[in-house]
Picture 1 (tube, each protein chain N blue to C red):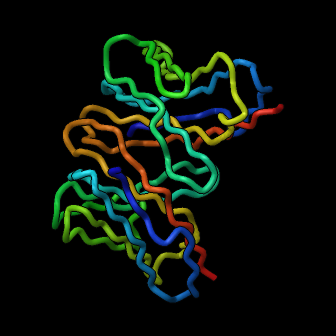
Picture 2 (picture 1 turned 135 degrees about the horizontal axis):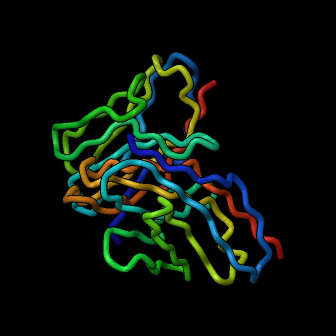
Length: 114
Length: 113
């Protein structure tokens, strides 16, 4: 069965600092990978996705993520964090033989210090 | 603008009562999903439907029921059999073709006392 691990439950960074949120997945098929962001009390918004091709993908709000098959990772990065980036971030994966059934990680809550 | 509407945003019920959460989409998506969100546990799939009049159980379907009589609507009923119903419930939809991103509603927070 596929699974997704986000090792960091909480992360605090200073405004303007760089950010990296970790995501590791495990299953045997070709992965389709997603990052979503959730503001408090809201639904989830898609930041970016990786299906194939270039392993570095660009998303909205200045985020990017890199797929590393050898490490089973899909870490999310941003070079300079803004206070409005404070939210919860979810990594999700679906294998190509599981229809569109996403498996979500437990989430990482990002706090931004002024 | 197209989107997914969940109502109400907050819902309070007494233990032992059934309650129905509404989810409507105007994205013309074939597939719809219900997720439950608890702190620190990510999202867990309750039910999903890939076509009208058909739906499948997800990972945590016990104590829940759904219907899909119209393409636009996928209501979720939380029954009295659900042992821990207090949670944040999210509805989502997708085109249903291959692997496609989910579009989410803004959720309903259900509190049962």
